Amino acid sequence: MESRNTNFLQFLKMKISSPLTILFLLFLLQQTLLSAMADLQLIKNTCKGTPSSSLCLKILLADPKSQNADLTGLALIGVDAINNKGLEILKQIVALKESRPELGPVLDHCAEVYLAVVDADVLSSRDALRTGMAKFAEQGMADSAVEAQVCEGSFGEHGHTSPMLGSNNAMIDVANVVRAIVHILLYG
View (cartoon, helix red, strand yellow):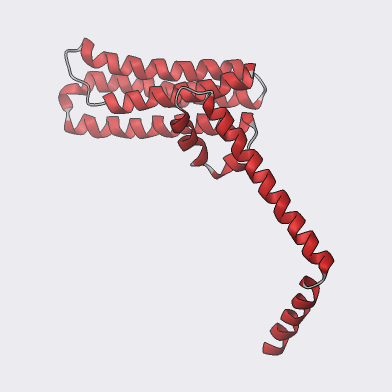
């Protein structure tokens, strides 16, 4: 077995040491680096056109698919972030219902609006982006922000202080960033 490995290593040394092979490997490395830099530049330029460049970068760079995505792909990554945030908030609502039973009706209302985000806004936005109807995705992201505002407002309407202010504001912020990405896709 050792002689096979030794023979293979000797073969590799001979092949790699040829000037043509070295040039080819350098060319591949250069192309890979240029492609990666171009993709990162698309992400940075896109995020500059959103209400929160830092949040946008955080969302997009958290997904490895962003490294090879076009603008539609970046918008889809943003829609996935809305979905994840909605699911996270729905889990928070379940936990709050157990720890704060007096908030039951308000939390039930919030659960309804966040189910609308996950089951309607996210799904319709994904479909719209995949079928080239980005305007409907922009509307879905606007609706996601409104749903978070509705949830937050329902606490005050029932005379309660919201234990979800941070989560609702986070959803609004993410939705506004993703809506801006879709807007860039639509209008440049």
